[in-house]
Amino acid sequence: MTPTKEAELRELIRKSALLNAVKHDGKAQTGAVVGKILGEKPEYRSDVKKISAMISEIVQEVNNLSPEEQKRITEEKWPEAFVKEKAEEKRLPPLANAEKYDQVVTRYAPNPDCVLHLGSARAIVLCHEYAKLYKGKFILRFEDTDPRLKRPVLKFYDLIRQDLAWLECKADEEYIQSDRIPIYYEHTERMLKDGNAYVCTCKPEDFREKILAQKPCACRDLSVEENLRRWKLMFEGGYEEGEAVVRVKTDLNHPNPAVRDWPALRVLDTQKYPHPRVGNKYRVWPLYNLASGVDDHLMGITHIIRGKEHLTNEVRQTYMYKHFGWKYPEAIHYGRLKITGASLSKSKIVQGVREGTYKSWDDPRLATFLALRRRGIKPDAIKKMIIDVGPKTSDVILSWENLYAYNRKMLDSTADRYFFVQMPIELTVKRVPKDFNVRLNLHPDHPERGFREYHLKPQGESSTLTLWASRKDIDDSKEGMMLRLMELFNVRIEKASVYSAEGVFVSESYEDARKVKAQLIHWVLIGKDMPCSVIMPDATITEGVAEDACRKLKPDDIIQFERFGFVRVDKNDASLIAYYAQK
Ligand SMILES: [Zn+2]
Image (cartoon, rainbow, N blue to C red):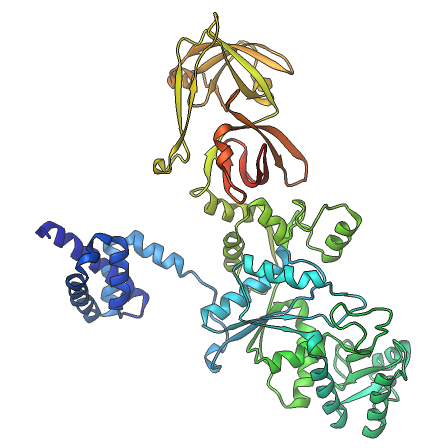
């Protein structure tokens, strides 16, 4: 190693050690630095011993500095690296009382009656991120105990798991409430035996009248024996649907009547409404607050993170927790997240698909994860947006544009560029003086990614080239005006109709085009093209031709059609089918 080389290497190690120290409370880890250096400079792998010795020496020097000193040097010498490190650590605000628990446990608890959509993203991402942040556990719990009104559907269990996997928010554990029905029975019985719950057989309107007047119904003060007898009857067919409900005792004077003696279990006619997983095995079904409340405790959930529409549920469940002598988990209730222009109503999505308004769950008009995925919206864009919004309690209104801004950041550097001509018409250019060999970089900032190359050879007596150009571009130009075919040459349009246009070669120089502010337009060489259909977010189809180089694209590739937008390749055989992501 020459002295210069060694000095360079030492400086690189010092930088890596300092950054590592800043990240780890002032103590750089030798192993991490070795890994980083050998990753960046694989040529030193043959000399690991020497390099490791050098690294451990420098790491020690760095660790002898105070954390303030380490930070100061880093910020001063490598401000950009420091900013980047910091940006990566931009995180959610700390979780309340996280230190009180051995392990932070969060849960996402969907009803499998629809696929997930953008409206679900906040709960999922916050719960998953917090679990990750505290090295905790993220639980997926299917809350499928309403086979009557919020009927679960088998295929959604799997689609929801797939949605989570796509979002990179896979659960560490999974539970399905319809597997746990006996657990809810057991806890209900305990409350009945302790006199903390009762079986109410009042007509709903009679109960309502009493409860609004802060008066008990006749069932509230029945003996434990009578309640257990009624409870047994609920299972034996002694009550029809709607005739009996178990209520949890609360404070009849609670200011919110909706809290007073809330219903916990009811009888359902499962002959009529069989459950998709357990059929008519059970007649008595728990309601949301019982099942969810019992599960949160039994599953060791430490932090419930959910929308503020659940605030009353916390109040209801707190009574049950008191009956059992349990401590209620920390609860974080975030504000509503509205996305303008996106329909986030599950019932409307389900109805639209059922009636055929939407072709499928991934119809581009929907904001389901399936649709976003098909269009080329990256899961990381969704995650970053949600993390930036955080768990604040105020309502937040976002737009598609907000999401596109995050997505663009991810796509701009990764998507290769191609030419696509929508509504193509034939453009004949005469008097082209020579052959042209055009090389187009796949990405303007990354020439190393390669290029496409087209050879254009004028034909016939008048040295003619025929190209596809967009009717819209030609329409926008007036006869006699100059246009610049991108990366090619300037042309003056002499004649244009709906089907074709004719022009004449003017010059090659880009300067000429700039001087007259000529419009830059895309083109595709006829014979070096392929048909291409782009499915737009409103489900209309934009037809056109893509350049020949697109033939090698594979499904899921996300590319940019210049001056058109980012698209995700959906299918590519004789013709290219793409979904439009965004501008
Ligand atoms: Zn009653």
